[in-house]
Amino acid sequence: MRRWRLWLPLAAFAALLAVVGFRVGKPEAPLPSPLVGKPLPAFSLPLLEGEGRLNSADFAGRAVLVNVFGSWCVACVEEHPVLLEAARSAEIVGIAWRDKPEDTRAWLAKRGNPYRAVGVDADSRAVLDLGVTGAPETFVVGPDGRVAFKLTGVMTPEIWRDRIRPLLESLK
Amino acid sequence: MIRAALLALALAFAAAPALAFDPAESLADPVLETRARSIGEGLRCVVCQNQSIEESNADLARAMRGLVRERLAAGDSDGEVIAALEARYGDFIRLMPPLKAATLLLWAAPALLLAAGVAAWRRSFRIRAAVAEGAAPAVADADEPRPGAGLLAGGAALAAVLAALAYVSLGHPGVPDQPIRPRLAERLGVSEAAIADMQAMTAEIEARLQTHPDDARGWLMLGRADRYLGRHAEAAAALRRALTLGEADADILADLGESLAIRDRRVGDEAEAAFRAALEIDPAAPRAVFYLGVARAEAGDLAAAAALWREGAALQPPDSPWRRRLVGHAERAEAALSKP
Image (cartoon, rainbow over all chains, first blue to last red; front, top):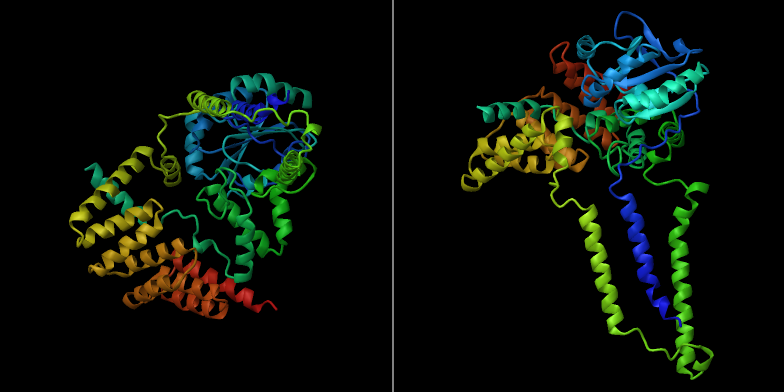
């Protein structure tokens, strides 16, 4: 009997439907960054406070978090308490993206400042060079200057506790 | 009151709308600009869904367009520009996936499927030919009844049920399909409610113009609101209507020219005529000067473009941003000219 073969197209269709159904509706996973494992692209940005610049070379030899944020970014507000907590044990540098310095200052004054230093990237050049697609994004950079991990989106208390803090400890 | 405030907002923004294609971004050198556009059309706007950076209004796409142009102006090859972005964003940055080991199946799939189809078709063709020649006994089940209508209908019904089930579990029939609204709100930095009000108000003006088609002021409001919402083809039509009904000043003509240029993605004849008319009213009209220079540059006449920008810059008040901008463009055009 080869009659069962007649059902093959339908079975194939059902299988396709199942695969599509399984994938559709899932939130899109953030794309893996090709920068992970590679040296952090160099940047040099004017400091938010005072004269001078924030250079990526400044934190060579130390494990740091590089956090891209902006006062316009709603998700950054959500993330902020976690960064304040993280700042107690980690060095965090901020990149204020597409933001007016006075707005960034007011935002940090209101919510507390977890950053050792903040660089101002008004024209998105540094952010593009880092392959950033939105704020917030956080890079875990090792003492060797390589990107150990990149987080796209909000750092939740769980992500900080379970992934980033242990990773930083292992890098130190 | 709220409505009046919104309208004031619309008019304020109308002078400086955020645009997917802002000719002010373009390079003075038409050859480089053409290269920049063709690179940009192959690069994905990473915060949009399947839009190229040339098509997108997103700030990130705008910044990326600037980066592409900067690198080209600095002497990078097309390949170097793309490779630099690919190193940061991965293959995803390309709208067309590159051919490599990981994507081999993706690229080969259409050819493989076609080959499988042809093979299946040839096979069934041979069997039928054999049946027709009476050599059927070689094929064991050639005399098996053909699939009945019942089976076909059953299959179709099953497919329909599966599709309905899939829609019930995955579909969102209640979701309003207004994705433009949050994007506009983000781009313009106002609340979604304000955009909704704005759209409602535009509809209201439109409705009123149905009964009062000679209301020049109404057409002007509609045109500016459309510009604010980024609908430049509609804006151009409305502004033109306002102008033919008697509203005439250099600013409206420049708005019209700019909307036409954005609609056509170049400074075409229509836009040029509008800018010329603006200059007749106000010889210093900075946007008219700027775009007419862009038209010359697009036509390949950089010398004429530079001369226009220089003359126009001299007419602007000292320290005005337009003066600096026009001088900057003139300088870039002159620098491009002095290169061999």
